[in-house]
Length: 224
Ligand code: GRF
Image 1 (tube, helix red, strand yellow):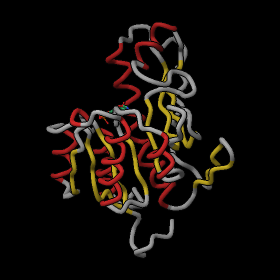
Image 2: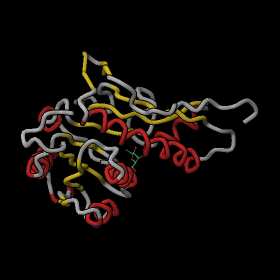
Image 3: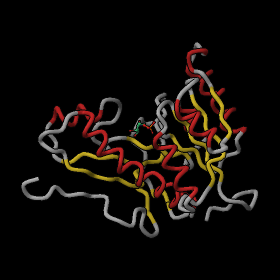
């Protein structure tokens, strides 16, 4: 378990921008005693999103820092950092947070900010990952949980889950298959962090024990 200044379960602040299904997966894991920490707050850059309702239903504090009200990126980042700091997190999780963060805020939470990305990094950083994977004809696709660094989607990798790309897939079917794995991988990676089982060594992460007990690599079966 990571040592918290309060001697209580690690506090987690989740940043989200939309639907919030990964946030819901974290809260489900928390309820089941499988998260290793408590989602204390949710911060969004957009008002009125589903993730805020999910947070409120679970009793997590919510804050909106609306990026459209800031002229400069650094001003938005500073307000976002204030909102995050106010929630006193031990860990910050980007779960579908769709703003690129500048170097100052990334440095502030270095080693305690995770992101879930819907591709097998370093392939397909950035947007439209499923569309690009289909266009390229890859047979294996997936998702990655990594520490956040100043290089977008290139921080040290904690865990990855892979799925097959099937012949009949379109963007939606592939996204749904990947999302199912995201919902298992992210809570498990957060738990490993909260239990103090992740050690960053250069660009690699050493993991003590397993991240996900069942295999997340689903190899396409012959003829599938
Ligand atoms: C997920 O696919 C996540 O990997 C990506 O954005 C999507 C967010 O989905 N960064 P949700 O808001 O968690 O449902």
